[in-house]
Amino acid sequence: MLIVLVAMNTRIVDPERSLVDKIPLMHRTPPLPVLSLLLALVFAWLFHDQTAGLNVFLYEGLVLAVLWWVERPKLTIESTLALLGFALTSVLVVLHGSTLALLVNLLSAALLAGLLLAPRLHALNHSLLLGLAHALPAQRAFLQGLGRGTLGRRMPTVRGRAVFTLLAIAGIVFLFSLLYQASNPHFDRWMVKLGSELAALLDRVDLALAGTFALGLVLSNTMLLRTRNENLLQWMIGSTDELFRRRRKPANAMLGLRYELRTGVILLGVLNALLLVANVLDIRHVWFGFEFNGQYLKQFVHEGTTLLILSILLGAGIVLWFFRANQNFYRGSKALRLLAYLWLAQNVVLAISVAVRNYWYIHHYALAYKRIGVIFFLLAVVVGLLLVGLKVQGRRSRHFLFRWNALSAYCILLLLACFNWDVLIAKYNFAKQDQAFVHLDYMATLSDRALPWLIHPQHELELIDQHNQEIIGSNSFSRTLYMPPRSYADVIAERQGAFLATYPQRSWKSWTYADARAYHLLRE
Image 1 (cartoon, rainbow, N blue to C red):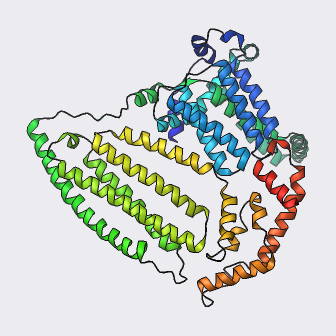
Image 2: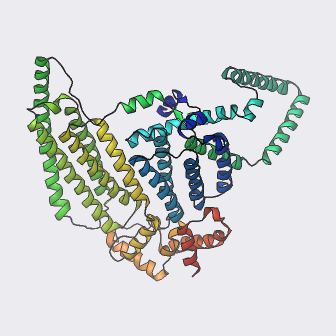
Image 3: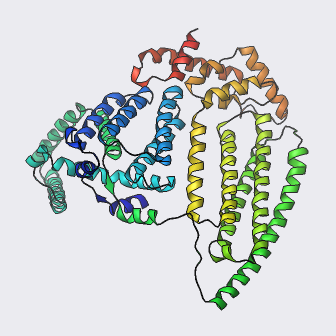
């Protein structure tokens, strides 16, 4: 809803006029709406009835080539990072074919679109908001661009009032058609016949192809066309990393700062004491005194993660509240700063405790998506805590905090997308079958690209199942909760046969290295 409201205040810039001011030879290139139409046609050809793969790399490479041809944008550090992330993730989609790589690729596209609109912005969070808000006005810019062309001059101008009138007329006609159809059987038979003919006509229309073309047109317009949101840009340009002192009456200001200082010292002092007790207990019982007796460790990790999230959000919010304004410039706030640093450092220790819990979880129950996600989440948390400390130390604004956290989160997502996690999970878990609990139900859900590492002989699966029962204990192990080895082997064999039968029928447009590698390994 926020994006839509922001987009409604967006003023459309004439795409041709704005680019003519930047590029003297713009008249030699086709109009941008025409290029968007051509890119949409290519998109429909590449993606209709296909999955993400080589087509992503080809389409996005063509988009970048067109952008460079018509605009030659000046690259900043942020736009270079977004451009490299956009190109890298398109390659990762071809290599891994993972949903994660595709999602980070779309995120990179939104960042790049925002940075192309306002290259001077140095905050990825601002660029992302600007790029998302630009998507709707870009479609209006496309329609207006067509209206300035030869085709548009031959078509009647349709305004908002006319659209409302046409919709009202259509609604009234539909209402009276229902009335006549209910009161006249001959009219009813004629309407039924007309409806069947229209349905037969729609059956001959490939709606999926039309939808693919429409999606390609929306994406192409968003990347190529330019709009300008004055209100949003003014707010973004006005943001700065520096924190400025607010001038107030000396007496009131000094009393307020002293009262706030005492409150902060008491509060952070008590919170540090509480967290110190929690950290000491974690170090004693989790870091060095942990004993595994076959218990489920899901709650063991989740309770620590929940505590971490609550502690980080509340603690960071408290620190940011006390150091939001003039307390940063008060000479007597040294004790409060030390307590803030100690609080942040203890939260880092808390994050390490959660990492140790997650380590024990992986050690005894092998890898899974959420356990991997916890690792990267903790990395983002530690970076965020360090940034809060830098904000307090350098008297920085909240803009500084959001800007660098956005950059950190984007880099972590790029790192996360670089790996083929399904294959890594399959390799690791079966390699640790003598040490960890291998959840066969979960392994059977991994993607087809991991199939070569999911196939194991029946006797080995029986040994894995026996070891799983030994880990949990025969009394606690319930067959209704876990897949038997025979059922697992049947599921994997069925998936293997289906994959080997359908893969040769796939188009080269959906080709990925991971699927091709899995197919060749399975054939061998």
